[in-house]
Image (cartoon, rainbow, N blue to C red; front, side, top):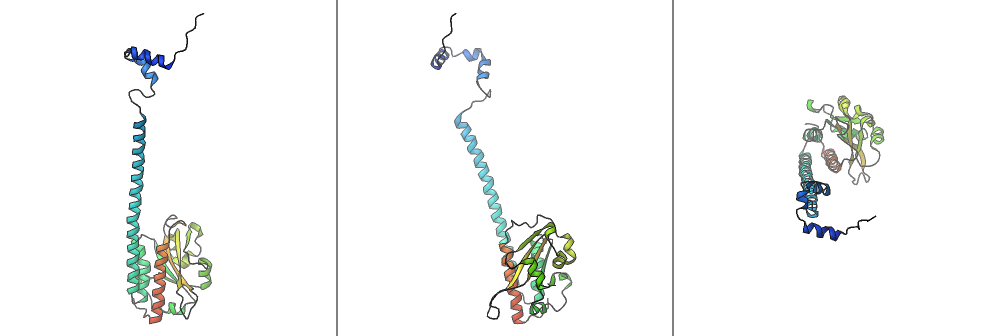
Length: 246
């Protein structure tokens, strides 16, 4: 029985060159030989499409980075403005208003308050006069052991989410039921000749109404800077003798 010898690729190409109208006469053979009929596939076109996708992704990432930079600049300027006004303030209750109401309004925080330790009678004495009505339940005087228990001995803010937040009414008063996540920023008196070691004097408390308003992964550098300036302003008022007038 006769057998057909195997065809070499060169033979096929030579035959097609001699019969250029083969695929025109048999279009079904062309569609079976190409994976996507009607399209011309090339390595260059695929590479170009890939580069365009990469370019679009890079542009989106760059836009997101620029948006974050603009937002961070706005946040920095807002914090700087609050700190400047604190330094210029001449009355204790005015400093409390700046430390609590301003961040609350600017950054849409549910509740911001201040806690002071009972071991700081000079600081507590700055607020012997009743607060203005707008500042009620903005300042809480807490037992020092409770502050230490909650804040620890470190200077980093404590972020608590959901049910982790113990003693919330002591830090947020009647607004505690609206708080679902919080940042408690320790307040430390600066070191000086009379106090060679810094001491915990209280906390700046920020409460969010949703569990994801404050998360452990959040950056807190600006909050710590704000708390440091706030502490310095309070201690300075003790030294110059604050009047307690708003």
